[in-house]
Amino acid sequence: MNRVANLQEWTTVLEVMVKSRRADLAFKTTKQELWNQRAQDKQAHNDFLEEHRGTGKLSGKYVPSANTADLNNAVGLLGRARRQGRAL
Image 1 (cartoon, rainbow, N blue to C red):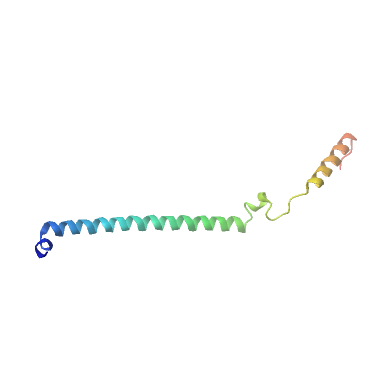
Image 2: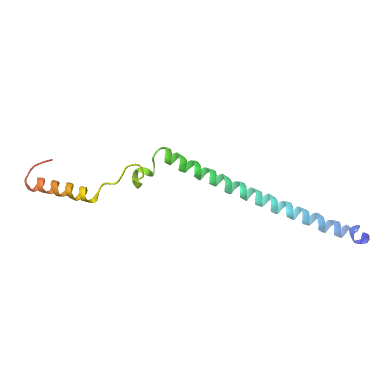
């Protein structure tokens, strides 16, 4: 065992393995940092839109949607007024 551990080739193999593992770790660390940064940016963007009601205006989240019967009545009244030459 001591003969193998003392060989220059074995030392070189171990050094290459350590460098390879460090490079893999550095790559994975960078990838994780980028993923976390994207997640934080996305959360900040969503918080900004929520605060400024960006998407809520169109989704009906903040204002209740109109009743279908009320819409039909409004269209019917408008149509009758136009046919009779009156403006509402």
